Structure formats: C-alpha cells, structure tokens
Length: 415
Image 1: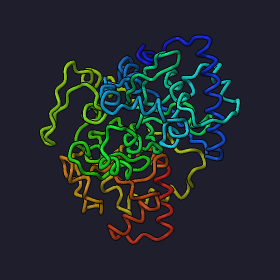
Image 2 (image 1 turned 120 degrees about the vertical axis):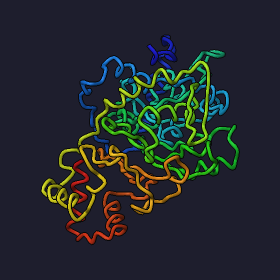
Image 3 (image 1 turned 90 degrees about the vertical axis):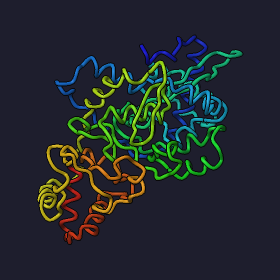
Image 4 (image 1 turned 30 degrees about the vertical axis):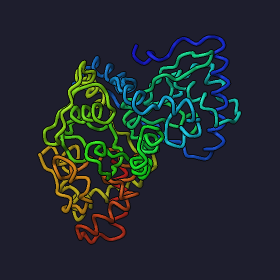
C-alpha cells in the first residue's frame, strides 16, 4: 500500500539501532516537554452514509501519505533531505511542531520508548522515524549508503498542517488526529531552513510563527499569514477557506499544486494562476480526498469544559442581543451557504488578506469545535473566545453586560 512505499523491511541490526534511537528520543521528549497538558483525544464520528466508504478509505490514505510527487520541490529544489540529514535533530523537529504517530512504530520500538535515555541532538534519530513512516505529514525515502541509513528524498502530505498527535504517549507523540489543525507547526521556520531560500524570503518566513501560514506569498510576494484552519466539520458547508473562493476540492487542488508543489494542474483566472503538469498526480485523487475530509466530524467539547447553565443562557445572547445568528445561520452556523460573503469593514476584520484574494471578502466561519483551535479569526488576532466576544461587542456596539459576555463564551465553548 502507499503508506509503506518508503518503509523497507528492517534487518536485525536496523531493529536494534531503531530501538536505541527511539529510546533516546522519547526520554528526551519526556524530559524537555514534561508537564505539558495531554490534548483531548476527540475521535472522528461515524461516516456520513451518503459518502462512498471506498472513496473515504482511499482518501484517508491520500490525506495521510500522498505527496502528489512534491518530492521534486522539497528535495530537488529546497534540498530539505540534506537539511534533515545534516541538522534536524529530534529537538529541532519538536521545536517546529512536527508530530510522531505512535501507531506507526512496531511494538518493540514502542516498548523501547520507555527507556528514558536522553539525546535530542542526533539527526539520525529523525531519519529513523522517517524510515518507520512515523513523522506525521512527512514522507521520506531512506536508503542504505556506505552502511548507514541515508535520507535521499522527502515530501509532504496534507496531514502536515491538518493533523496532529494526541500526546497520549508523550508531548508531540501519540495517535493521529486527522482534521485537527497543527497549531504548533511552524511552516515558515521549516522552509527557512532550506539553503535554497533567499535571505529576504527567510526573513519573511520567520515572522509567521506557529500555527500560521501564508498561502499567497509565493503567488504575489506579500505576507499576511493566516491561521491553519481545521479540516473537520466541512460536510454541508458550500465554500471552504476564510475567503470562500471555492468548495473543498477547489482548495485541495490549490494547495496540492501551488503550495505543496505537487505534480498536478490547477487554474483560477480570477487569481491569474494556470498550472498544467503531466502526468497530473492530483486531479484524479480529489474526489476521494474530499470524501475523507467530509467524513471528519468536529470534536465534541470535553466533559466539564464549560458551564452548561451559562451556555444555555449564552445561546439566548447568541440569537438575541449578541446578533451572532444574523450571520451564523442554519445548521452549520454560517450564511455562506446562502451565497453571502462580508466586506472586512462589516465585522472589523483586517482587510489585508482579503485584498489578496479573488473575493476581496471574508466568509462567515462555521462554528465547529471552537474550543479546540485558538487563536481565532483568519489572522489569529483574537487569542481567546473572550477576545472574540470583546471584538464584536466593540465593533458592533452590542453593549453586552459582563454576565452576557461570560454566558456567550460558555455557549461558544459548547459548540
């Protein structure tokens, strides 16, 4: 299967070496990151019966493991295989938000993870994780060169930004959580490690920070990074992205071709983009990828994470004086299904990113799993739900009382 394409069988020597390196990794991770709270482990709900189960299964593999041939960019152009092999130790990988899928590790390796030995400074451990196909969102081809494991090619998948780990084994190491935005991931810092990137661009990339990415910089040269959005809760939402430029498959194609640099075709005359590549390794996979994403439900809030009585009162504020339901309408709590987009001035949003898009406006974001993915708004300018409520109270002159604000926040946490 595709996921094992870069996972050759391990020899006895390989297994001993792997156990030793992974023991070092986990001990270091546990020591350096001890005390971090374990993430709630919300699971995907049942697949919508209208979705094709076969397509969902195919889409899962594509989402997790398909690079669309983007190794030609990440390896041949950016030379990230050299960067990883030469200097990306586990400490560096963890610091830029990369995650490890514990279920990809053999039982013997999982047992070795409890050894507690500490060495975060060996890039060979990172290569071992890639050989085991355990780094979420990265695919690496590892070959034996002069008697040692050597990373010869590397590419990225959708899961790099739109999956995380539940920290069930250690901080940054656990079971995959597909659809959850990796709010720890620092894409700008990762790309800035490449020796092929100019100093001027590196300076821009390093300003983005964790959980933020600008999907237009390589198109127009500007930089107004937006938060990485969740890829769950999309079923029944007509237009994806903060600016509502198209449905799910539109955005998948845009990202796969223009951002991941996969080998495929994408065209949008509104943006002046036309990319045609043959063979096209993207377009035929879009239906399956879409069905898998549509099968991912937003996670329910953890038990006890909000005051139920306050949330009940907050629902009244949401529909009443708070005027939230003016735009957050219908079952998905968004008016985008009615064809509405909003000028930035309507809601007090920074217009800079919208001005770089085809619509020049913002979509009303569906309120899905809000408790899970701060910061809020397209640019992450609201660090908390309390800040969201304060923004609208000020911008729309709502004159909510402190009690109403608290109740409204409780309601938002319940969604």
